[in-house]
Image 1 (cartoon, rainbow, N blue to C red):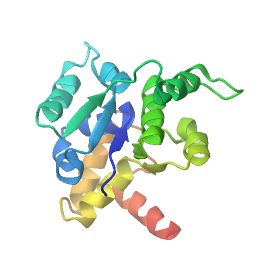
Image 2: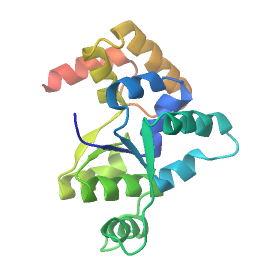
Image 3: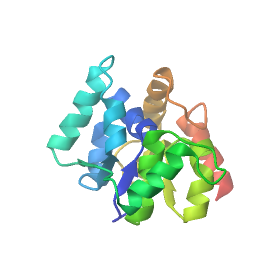
Image 4: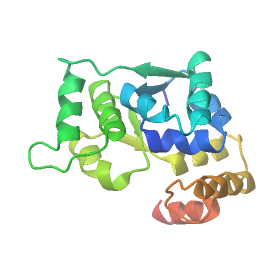
Length: 179
């Protein structure tokens, strides 16, 4: 994958919470872009270790942070998504930032929040990945095995991350049925 990946908060934080950022480094180092609103959401003073882990990825150049500047195409789209204009439901700032930047820069949106993003992924023809797909890619590249994937999955669920299956093995099984 050569495109930049525009992560929203939930997808990135799944890896930050369980300290599995090595997977992101190995798969996408240098291609991960955080919209500024995502970085702000990660900066919650109640959970400083999340921001610290993100800052380590930033200082190692695995991640860059992109501001959404007023007057730009991405700002107009971001504002529309956050406000819910044109009869559409408003979405969170992290999701809106990811969508606006992925569309503007022809990148890949990394998000687990299907309910909020699905209409926009379809409308804008965005490429999209989620935590499960990232773990499958890590499995395919030999970075993890299925047992390790299940352990990571359990840890993510324990940290209240929303994932589409009870186990990584179940996710793999359901994914293979769809192929």
